[in-house]
Picture 1 (cartoon, chains in turn blue, yellow):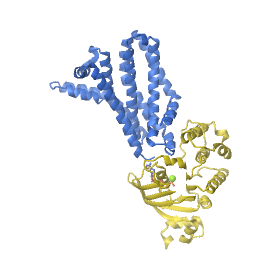
Picture 2 (picture 1 turned 90 degrees about the vertical axis):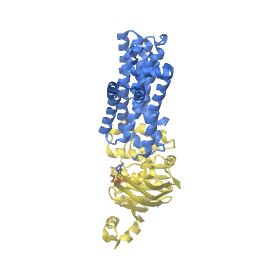
Picture 3 (picture 1 turned 180 degrees about the vertical axis):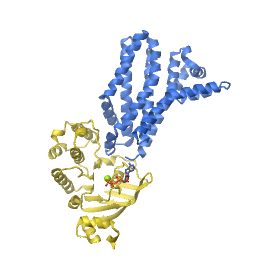
Picture 4 (picture 1 turned 60 degrees about the vertical axis):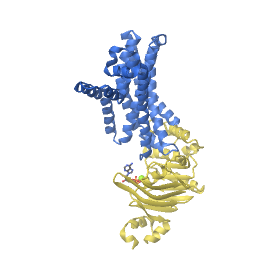
Amino acid sequence: MLKILKYSFYDLIRSRWSYVYFLFYLALGFVLLFLNNDLSKAIITLMNVIIVLVPLIGTIFGVMYFYNSKEFTELLLAQPLKRSSIFLGQYFGVAGSLTLSLVLGLGIPFMLYGLFKSDAIWNFSLLLVTGAFLTLIFTALAFNIALSNENKIKGFGYAVLLWLFMAVIYDGLFLMSLIVFEEYPLDTFSLTATMFNPIDLSRTLILLKLDISALLGYTGAIFKRFFGTHTGLVVSVSVLLLWTVLPVWRLSAKAKRKDF
Amino acid sequence: MIQLEKLHKKFGRNQVLSGVDLSIGDGGIYAVLGPNGSGKTTLIKSILGMVVPHAGNVLVSGKNVRNDWRYRQNIDYLPQIASFPGNLKVRELIRMIKDLRQKPSDEDNLVQLFALEPFLDKKLRTLSGGTRQKVNVVLTFMFDSPLIILDEPTTGLDPAALIRLKGLIQREKEKGKTILITSHILQFVEEVADEIVYLLEGKVYFRGSIEQLKNKTGQIDFEHAIAALTTPTANA
Ligand SMILES: Nc1ncnc2c1ncn2[C@@H]1O[C@H](COP(=O)(O)OP(=O)(O)OP(=O)(O)O)[C@@H](O)[C@H]1O
Ligand SMILES: [Mg+2]
């Protein structure tokens, strides 16, 4: 699997899109720091961008890479390699190179700005960890969609729909149900609803850590009351981990049964 | 070498293999024939584990290949459609396959044999179909495995390359290898094959030497014998 990972990773690192992605984050980091002139404030703005953008990029890159590397995959299948290694290797290659662009692109400007001397370092690290999780999760979901859809256009469509649903529609539905069922106790409902959406979960996770009550929002407040800040963090990281492991597991199981 | 037991495979509602029983011994050249869409490639891909059969078993060297992958170490396979990552150079592709298989290989002589030196630093996407097929042949023959599977190896090759390919096949046969070939070029099949396996309607319809086929159908030439095999009067 490591060999496949290596080939996929280098293949992507050499591609133009990785640079674009890296440069975008680099620019974003510098601009935010320039505008905010304050690490903590920059982190909050950054969170709002990351939480929407990282899943989108992961989804699109994942689907694109899967379909574009069809020939590579077919070549590998005839070689003495385990099927799950082929697909997991490619998956970690894509997710790894995306994560690297994210971490380096944001890390460099913040480091230059004196991140290591500031107490924002932990908040910033958590932001990057969450970004890495979101990349892993949405790339895995994208690979699953692409594996199940022979038709490129369809696969692409489903993947973008998935992102749209998680990033935009889900929140709308959630808020609407909060308003409609106002009179009922909704704590458990909100908790569950948040767990089922990795984007919401990531937002709650970061806000819990930042511990800014004004921004915590309804779900964040429930999280805090329910678990306390510390357990809340642990619980949300564990659920994110689950969100990563399940699609990766399905990918490897599904790949075993597919014909090429 | 290879045993297929009651192999069934369907794609959606399209039943392609319906109970193929076939046993292929050690050594010799076996030609798998049949009309377009009769399942030759599907059969080969089941042996390689690229297609997962619905029922039945594939045994290579006596071992069931289900969920195994190490046995492919002993198979050199030439796919019918050479699908290579297009933005790789020929040289990089050869190096990558060597790196993945970790076996001794003899690509330099083959590159020379097919005069591929000028193309080594070209991207695969930019190669002509025949040149790509030559690369395909080099990748297949550069290792020294006891089982060789060639799916339409002659596609796109010019006469000179075809002669070299036949030479390669003969050379490997003399080493005592088992070679499985599909082809629609009957002249080629007649020249190289020791035995014919004819697939029709998802089953092995005929199996035997070319002589036996001619006797069975009462035809004197191979082409007519194949044609007569599928017409109802053939067995009368
Ligand atoms: N991955 C697949 N998905 C769906 N159908 C498939 C797939 N692979 C093959 N088929 C179908 O299976 C049938 C047999 O195909 P196969 O490629 O095995 O034929 P073949 O004997 O190799 O033909 P040819 O002489 O044209 O190479 C065809 O009807 C084909 O459409
Ligand atoms: Mg075929």
